[in-house]
Length: 203
Image (cartoon, rainbow, N blue to C red; front, side, top):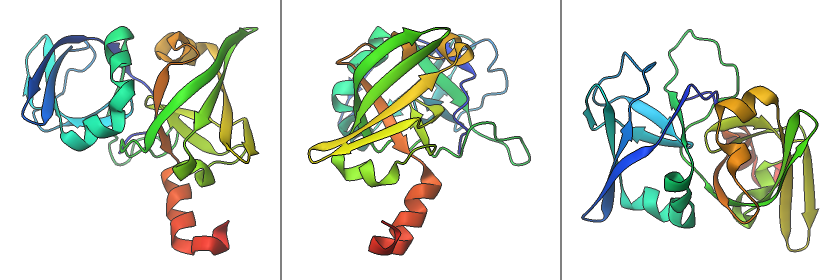
């Protein structure tokens, strides 16, 4: 479990295709001192397990389901820095919202532009998960906890708007994504649990 507050950024050093999987080696951030094999790290919002570790690198194995969900988004893992967050510890403060690291889908960036000191983004939400979004709710994009500022619904789909404050611009990769790029999206876990438990009554 994570909170959506990015602790470091990294880049892919090497990727090695395997049987229905992919192994990637990333640069180990200097601040990640207490890592062990088997630990979970949110990598662009995807919960990955540390498979191999050295003083300079971290290795993960991406299984077939992960690769299937990422699909067109994985190309941007090589193009832009990766957002990283170590798993939460019980008793720690949760500064964002509860994030599982189980990405629901990929979301297309429709607009991305600076507005004063901040950065505005508008994204397309896949039909299968649009029921989990409402104004002032939470969303996780590439592992970053954000507030949904606006929700635009019509007959063909749903769009959301989010705002990146200067700290988020500096410490995450989101402002580097351009219209036409894809980001990983995870709907609020509590919203999903509530709606799925109540069924049509919750909508």
